[in-house]
Length: 498
Image (cartoon, rainbow, N blue to C red; front, side):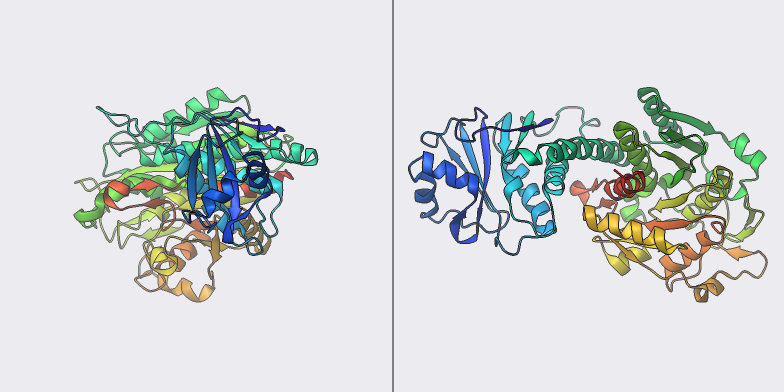
């Protein structure tokens, strides 16, 4: 699907569909008023029938409107003109593409940029339209053998430029939004791929393939032998029960000066998690293909970084492994030595994400990072705490935490700051090792973050627990959401001054 900006008279536009808005109480937007005048009151006559009132997200398709060149006019409810907000606008954009997908229109002129949205400019609105339209046509059909699913007809979307002064910002929004959508698609494709396809080796292959596409990227992969030499006993303890070898994948984007400190993203890449010897309940174990959503989002984010060629240095590190039960798997009670030299008593083999992340977080010391964000579907406890609306953020640096929060508010990929107090550290005390890998049932997401904090004292760091936001897991409706790719990209774009 291609996006462009167009300065054109909507009445004479030759698109197969025009998208125009109306507010509550059937109050027409500026463009809808133009169409109504040209059609000699046709829109007002339709509105009097009561099929649409202008409530946010309502849609109605009109065919062959008199004196309008376009074949269809899609009316979209914008809600109360004085109370439009960003979250509402995103829902309106999602409803718009859903309605458009029910037609066979291949081209459209979208005039929703004129909607009144408090504290949001034309760049923000245009970018959200691009992102939501891409999300609306996303399909994961590569695993289907007999059908390709519902067809996607829409090929061309033009965003109306009603004020020439907005043209530059709309074009920039199309570029940025398309770049973010591309990275989000990458993350979704990886996350939705089943565990028999998406193994640690597969993640490494896809990362190498990505680097071949962009001159700014290079990918290196550490094998288990390399990790053993580095002393990554914690990471290797997770993969030792599986026939699939672990991989530590490093993707570098060189967009800044050589001396510039990189921003580092670290992703948990457990490509399938049975829980190991601490076996999970079988009823919902199929959801564990999504235990690598942290890795998927990090790969997706650096895909966007390369696509937009951001003028900063970024490094994505993926700790990839498969957690399986076998005669060689780690046992509850085992003690392993991390790359940092600290030892961990494994009380629960299902608390494996932190075991792979801690060695990756030690490894990145060598990069002298400007900031570090690790991303992981780390705990079920965070789902109990925050549900599916916000990701949890923990940080040892106030500025990093604030910038992540700002990026979340900008993109509506929101986060909620959680405590990282030393009070919780005592829950990780071990009788025989430096720490345990689980702090018990109470404050599970917090103690997991406290565990990681022990390996991040040398740099400015934040941890995102995305277990509740990275995917939907409801039978046939299960799917990766692509979060928090947009948040990570906005954070990095802000760092780059874009």
